[in-house]
Length: 469
Image (spheres, helix red, strand yellow):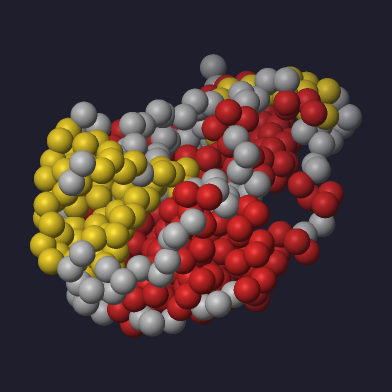
């Protein structure tokens, strides 16, 4: 029988290893984020946004997932039309991003988190908000400002959204090629493919929607040259979107961009270039959010790892993954005075999320290998210090703590579509159909102005807001 001396020696060795986990709760370490958010997403799917907010796990400001919890709350408050509260949460997240970027420059603040991650899993490390999530943060914040009729505030946010993408593009161009070509051949045979979800997406941060929203707001502010530039950026990402093509052609002719006009005559269909003059009526613009982005899942794999003693052993590891299947949506259809219009996709956030994860995978695997080796060293040390009881406890702990980091902004929409049509000045009733639901929307159109309709379709729940820009 093991005496109390052996047990005490084991605890004295084991407990300090977990002391670094104070910034993350034991729930986060042993129960992955996707599981914790199940009730939240179920309530969101049913349109019960306040219930969804109340279901978000409580976290202190020192918790490494605190910033993500704020993002979830901000998005749900936005859906509930509590825009001032949503704006407050988004502002707090932005301050945290700035603080963390400053810490990164002087390389402080991650030591304790990294120690905790070595002896547990990546859930012990501060959640670094991915670039596509940062651009969406600022896009929603811009819309929050619009609800307060603050176009200048909205423009500040949209410039921040664009800066996120432009900085990322510069960094991506300067990044070492070897980083993206890290050899994970041993993983590729087992790791579930995400190729169907990623599709033709080139990277995980270029978001045509944010550039499109930026162009709309620049136009509303009378800054047509800036609008033209951002429409062109959106078109580079989504070249087959008819509405982007129409806007590019319209502004090219307005601004007399002769070189571009000659190029676009060859590039765009005749239905766009023939007779589409700068509009002298009002424009109604729909931005349609579809569904909810899928959550990360946990994939269990066996990896051959060489220990410090050059011994090859098979280790069971848990890695994050997305389902390799996109949800199919029926685009919003609009009927007005016998004419039919149909929305077109401008961003698939599910694809951006999967591409972001794919790009991060080599780093995630490298951390996982380091962790496995460290845990094995700890287990062997416990065997030496606590005999068999140390080995038993170490194996139980290693099995329980092997959890993938499934954190992501999981209340975002799955995809975003756009639709535009020109209407005369006055009040109009538009008939729309989405997700099998017919609805009538009243819009007020002003001469040479834009009326923006933001619409969210989640299951059987459809809601919208209108803005006269």
